Structures are given as C-alpha cells and as structure tokens.
Length: 228
Ligand SMILES: [Zn+2]
Image 1 (spheres, rainbow, N blue to C red):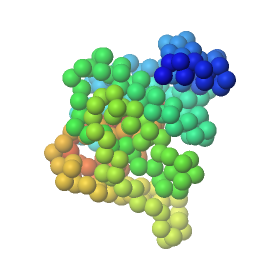
Image 2 (image 1 turned 45 degrees about the vertical axis):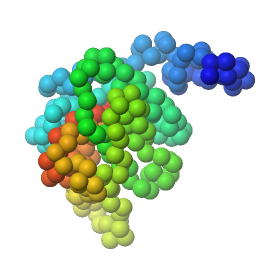
Image 3 (image 1 turned 90 degrees about the vertical axis):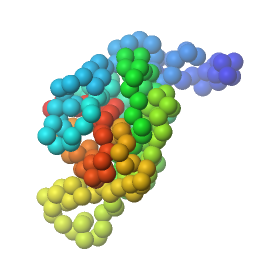
C-alpha cells in the first residue's frame, strides 16, 4: 500500500485540508502540525461539559461529547467547509476515526451498543451527495468496533402543505420530524447519537425524543461544538 501511496503522491500530491501543505505518506487529510493544533474540546464525556449543558433538561442521557470547538474563521470551520461544500466525504470519515482513536485511548471502557447518525434532510443530502453525520459516524463505528444503524431513525421529508406554512410553524414542526423505524433493534440499548455540529441542540433533541420512547439510553457525540 505504501509504495503505491508514495507513487500516487508523486503525481497527485495530497494536501493538508487546513494549511494546504503537501502531506507525507503517513499523514491522512491533515498534516502533523495542523493535527496537533486542532481545537479539541478534550472534555470527552465529563459531567457538566458545555455540550451536555446545551441539552440539560431536554434529553436525559448518559453523557455528551464533542471532538472539536467550532470558531468562526478557525480550523474547524475550514474542515466543515470541505465536508459540506466540497464533497470531502473521506475527511468526515477520517475525523470520525481520529475522535474514536482519542476516545479509545482516554476511555477504553466506552462502548455503546449502537451508533446512529442524525438523518439529513433528503433535499440537502441529494445536493451534497451524502450525509456528513453518517460519514463521521462510519469513522467512529470502524475504530470503536460498534455497529452502525443508519436507518434506525427516519427524517420525514417536507410535504407541500408544510412548505406553505410560515417559518414559525415549520420550526415548530422540527419537533416531530423524526420517527423510529427499527424499534426492535433499539429497545433497551445504549445508543450513541451522532451529529456534525451542535449549536442550539434543537435537531438532536428532536432526534432523541422518539428514541427515548423505546427505553434507549443515549450518549451524544458531535464532530463540533459551536459556542454561542
Ligand atoms: Zn496543515
């Protein structure tokens, strides 16, 4: 593999997604310098961390954690830009693997039963070609050795009547937009619900609500935490 990677690198140099430096064979997506500088939250699933606090009183959970802080014009924003607008699916997977490797090192006992990514609005998924939360979850699943259940929750697509409703009413509707599709696989399990960015927590709250009706224990994992 390495010989081929070396040969390919000669003709198609891979560049760091943050600083555009040419990557060496052992580096994936991000150069060693930028990797060390990533704005990690470092709080894993510690109690009362900022990600958990966003969902306090809204989602009963085992814990919550985010890999990176999101700051405007910072590294995380750049990485998310590649993921969301430049189709860099493999970067989302790579970041999932990075987060999982660090968790595995810090918390060797952390092992949920299942990983479920928050489904993306179908129109957005079609435009982007993939769901970035699913790609991030794939990286997590691979390294943690925890099965992924990408179709356990379904996001309803907007109907014509919904599009005609006012913005306020549509916002109200997000509350009931997710439904559980595979209840038998979820009953009584410990599920890691995975999203790309947590901001107000409204989407994650809406996504977790139907899961809680099936006696599911929830851990929240996000790629980034946007600080308000
Ligand atoms: Zn770099």
